[in-house]
Image 1 (cartoon, rainbow, N blue to C red):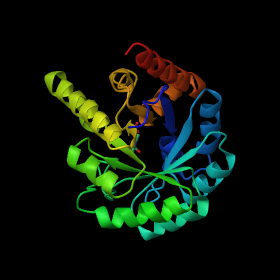
Image 2 (image 1 turned 90 degrees about the horizontal axis):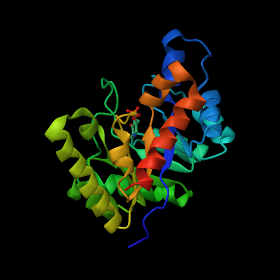
Image 3 (image 1 turned 180 degrees about the horizontal axis):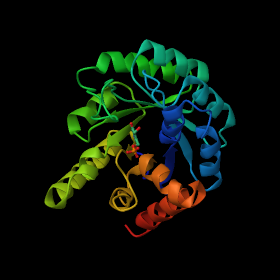
Length: 248
Ligand code: PXP
C-alpha cells in the first residue's frame, strides 16, 4: 500500500465565477483571473467543469486556464467522446469524470463505475496515454471503489454531497461512509480525493481523514469571496484544512 499523503491539497472550483458572467452574457467576472488570485492565496489547483450545456464554464475558459495556471488544472467532464477530445487537446494535468444530467442544479450523484466499467476503462486509458491523471467521481461505496480500481483509474474523488446534506446522526453515518471509503480506496492503491457540498463548517471532519489527498471546493469559496474577496476566502479554507489534518 502506498504511503498516506502528508499534507492535504485544495482544488478551487471557479465554475460559479463563470455562472455570474453567463447570467448576463458579459465578459466579466473572469474565472481565469479569479483562479490566478486563488493560486496566489495558496490554492493547490484549479478545477473547472465544462458541462455539455456550457451553462457556466465555456471551452475558451478551459483553454485559457490550461495555459495560465501556475499550479494544475483539473477538468471535470462527462464521459463523452466530445469531452474526451477536448481534454486530449487542452491536456489538463487531471480530469475528473462525473455523471451529468441536463436538468440537474449541480452534479447529483456519483458515477456508476460498476455498470460503466468497460467504457470508463477506455476513457481512462485514452487520457492516461496522454499523461492525464483521471479520477472517477463516485459515491463512497466499496463496489464503486473496487470497480474504479479495476477500470484502471489512478484516482477517485469521493462524493461528499450525502455527508454535506445530512444532519445529526445521519451525518455521522455519512461521515463514517466517507471514512470507510477513503480507507478502502487507499487499500486499493487509489489516490483519494473528495468533494461536493463542502463549506467552512463541514470541511474539517473530511480534511482530517488521513487518506485524503485533495478536496475540491467551489460554491462555498466563491460565495465567501463575494464578502471578503478571493484571497481571503481561499486562505481561510486552506488554513482550516491544514489545522484539521494537523490535529487528526
Ligand atoms: N467535485 C465535483 C466532482 C463536482 O462536480 C463539484 C461541483 O462542480 C465539486 C467537487 C464542487 O462542489 P461544490 O461547488 O459544492 O463545492
